[in-house]
Length: 234
Ligand SMILES: C[S@@+](CC[C@H](N)C(=O)[O-])C[C@H]1O[C@@H](n2cnc3c(N)ncnc32)[C@H](O)[C@@H]1O
Image 1 (spheres, rainbow, N blue to C red):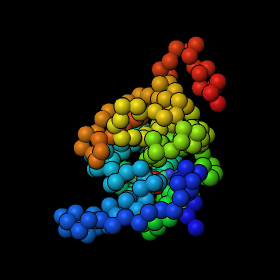
Image 2: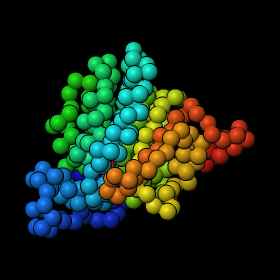
Image 3: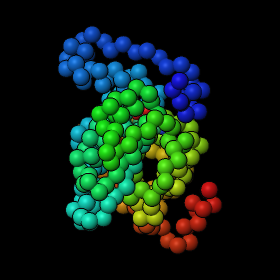
Image 4: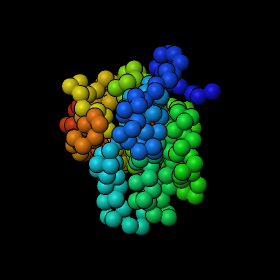
């Protein structure tokens, strides 16, 4: 049986959603299949379609720049919530033989897709809730597509703590969320962003438009006196 986070499990069985025939006719078969997957997993995805190539390119460009600036150093990369693998594919394209990617997906349907396409060699795909993931850690880059705003604040906070525990001290955490007037349900996430943000931009060419955040855990934006805020919230 598929493992659901507490929030999703509490919401009950998944609903079957049929794509309207008119919409189906206007897309090619593979695009339709992808959208159907997303709609069926709506509770976990918090999205109606995979991220656009514009969002993916903007996120992965940061990995590419890092690779060109540090050509020798092997990287450990973690991706959370790959869905159908739009980020996974581009991350792998940017990787060198010495780099390693671990991917964690909750949905059985998405896991099967991503596992069959990418698992093997220096790429490992795991089927589990990120909160259950017990990887060795030390990740240089963490790409996350977890739909925080669809989760209760305490689960969101637990996932942020998990990401911190898995990250190297100087890790990049790259993630997006859809543009909305109240972007942070979890005050822990807000504090992480306030403290470590190094880049934020809106990608309009995405459905819906998304805000892309880059955090560097070794960069601090707050005066020293404010740095205890996170520790106090832990
Ligand atoms: C918004 S979709 C993003 C999919 C894809 N990365 C993209 O950008 O198109 C969120 C993904 O996170 C996965 N997910 C949600 N909660 C998760 C959890 N607790 N652990 C692992 N994956 C999770 C969902 O199953 C889904 O694949």
